[in-house]
Length: 313
Image 1 (cartoon, rainbow, N blue to C red):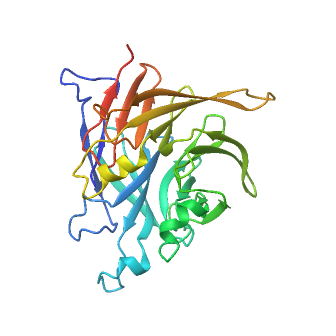
Image 2 (cartoon, rainbow, N blue to C red; image 1 turned 135 degrees about the horizontal axis):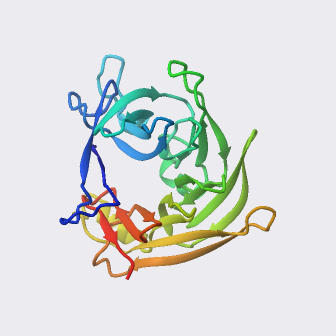
């Protein structure tokens, strides 16, 4: 998968927001031998370093292969998932590979949330890679949250650990809020759980029921959390399956706003701010990003090759 970025401050006359491709370079592994510009990517997050460099933390679902490079049975072994780190320097379109992270804590990674200190949290949407229970684990709450701590130097190994497990029902999107709390979307139960980082792991401090299937989360400049939602999950699954032929499905966006900061009681206000119930305009949405300055929403999909931009009236 090639990366692309938009200049959200400049729509330009063609309305394409100066869309540009980002080209990954360096020593990393993917499923297409010889096509090094491709990644088997799922979730990612970006951290801005002191010199303005954008550091990308990416989930890479590599296939299982032997030491000699022979493909192995993925149904028995599962994905050979890793985290890949890339740097994007100012004015460049080249993603320079920094390192690959391998860990037993990387079970079934879905999404990543950088902590701004060189480390990052991640979701495991299952508790195992394969097995009899694998297809039912989203009902059993066997997912988990992991954390990869920053290394002492660029050459030192990364340490990744599970910091919270149990009661995670297909944990999907994860973000670090402006309030320092971790927000996790549970796809199977339609809720967002809120966690406080501590030296011993993560402490759950709140739960926000939205009662709709959720995918990724994002945070805007105001600190509001936005959730991409799938009001009719079976229509979504049909549309994204190989038999769906890229069909449409209803989509919605929820905004979560925190009320009560400091010593006040923690409260949250959840509001559905956008819905395409008849699936006529929006993509099969997996991410919604808000530009707080203009009020625009950028809506993307893992299965559709376009981004929808919604502007306030």
